[in-house]
Image (cartoon, rainbow, N blue to C red; front, side):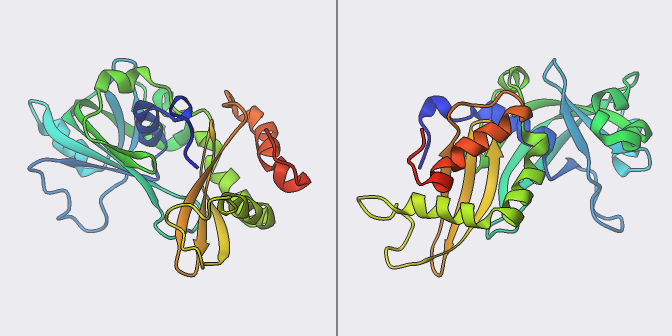
Length: 261
């Protein structure tokens, strides 16, 4: 059920999407004990500037702000971004992006302009600058150990990423029958079930795992089997407004008993 190479998102597209829409992002400064304080490490928000540097939004009261304010030179730091499926499934972590580089303050910039989705948090936060020199990606598509920072800057985030969580949750709550039919379609092959699915197993549940401009990924669950299946849209969508038609055409064989496009 893998798409053709020209329909797969590039590693840089996946990395930029994960960077800007991660479920959680934690910034660690090498040599600074950020974990000794009470509570969990603070979450940060990230955005990519046109020059390839990463804008990191932190709280004014955070240890990261204090450490960078006192530093005379840029600090070696690592940003760890984790992507978690918005629907409950086994093996829920979908991807991780690690960005290593030099961290410094970024005075004179407006956080609210770079992070409009964060509202008051953006207005109350402080901007730091991370200059990447190494990026490593591990996600549902595979692993890339040495991404190019310039390639990341040139890539665009997936246009449906902001709506993905709500759409997947809606599918899981309101379209279980259609999802199950999709799963059955993935297993119903003339040469038998795909690799990773036990031939004697019975399909128990199908959960949506990921949605992007090119298609939908679901997770097929049986008593002793778990398998991901990918369903491509008839063409990639350029804007969230195109998703209803794309989803309708994707489910058309399920709804009407045909084979679709």
